[in-house]
Image (tube, rainbow, N blue to C red):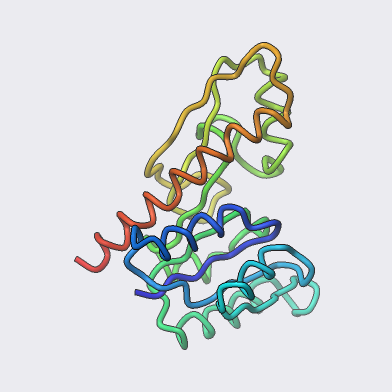
Length: 195
């Protein structure tokens, strides 16, 4: 089965999927990376592993919908069966969500439904968790629907928030859990989809 990964940054979650494929945990192929910017480290990771990559910037298209129409064509051409959003910061529009309903998953650095929604991404999530005095945080893999972080939850991993945690130290803890959880979930979904 072909997987497409969408990323906007360093690509450590992308790397966890690459490692999962290369170790045999994920019985699928990463057929392409969709990047939202040209200068992100996720592209370097794609190059290192001979994964084709494409850059789609919102500003280069007449609308976000038009951009996703182009992406849908590319995904269909590559016979993609599962889309993994791995630190991808561009909200999906209904056209792509409908085209791949039940086949798009996202990883979020908090225990949804807490600390999700528009504007809740990256370090902002960890800052909010600490500001709220939470005792635990973690990460969530969920299906993507037309809302922001509102799709059905597939799996979560928890971490303890220590009294002396900073947003940076909490991010490290959560990321290490993301790198365990995401490949496991992708492996399971690939098996389920392929029957």
